[in-house]
Image (cartoon, rainbow, N blue to C red; front, side):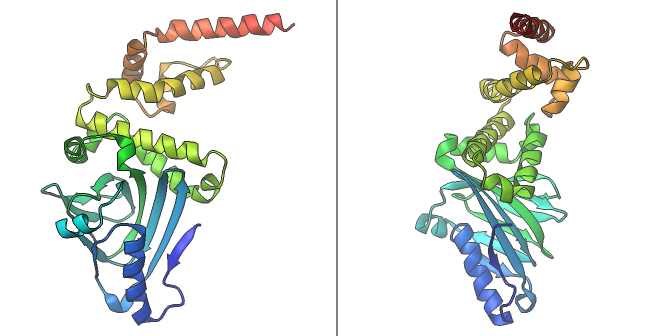
Length: 272
């Protein structure tokens, strides 16, 4: 893994100061409170994907507090989409207090005051994307944060974050790293706008998924089992959502598949 910090080999006194400093360096100015300073352990990893990055941390219990004064002194240019690995976090932001269960997504707006606690410790993975690249109003982000599960691509983003983290070493050093970063930014944008208002997000969702659906169909034309259920399952959406996307793109799914197969057959015949 791309380890950027570890308390391994440090004395107990050094671990406290070094962990707090590392948290500040990898995120934004905030107050770090350690649950048990005498037993603190931490390990942090970062993978860069162009303008986006994945940050994974394993730590004993802690609390982060970011105040308005700290925001004014050090604005954050990133938005965080995070998920816990087998542990529960507590978040307070936008006037709401929530318990974030394992494998649930949460949004952390680094330019709004917040308190975050990981009681007992654990591991979390976080996607940082540039706020400017999202082009979203603060009000939209704030409202979407409380209803992420309303987004039809909620599960897709969770899987994406998990896969990007698990394969960080390979993906971040590949020629596709920057493209993956841009895709992550667009996924985050679509997650937020569709959670805020699904109707508002129709164009964004169509723009995001239809190229991938078209490519998937063309790659599997020879598969006799290719149908709406297979295509929808491959993109973590329901068949009903798939048909809606196709309708917005003025496509009749079954007729389009037939047309693509006929076109493929004509191309193969012309080569003989």
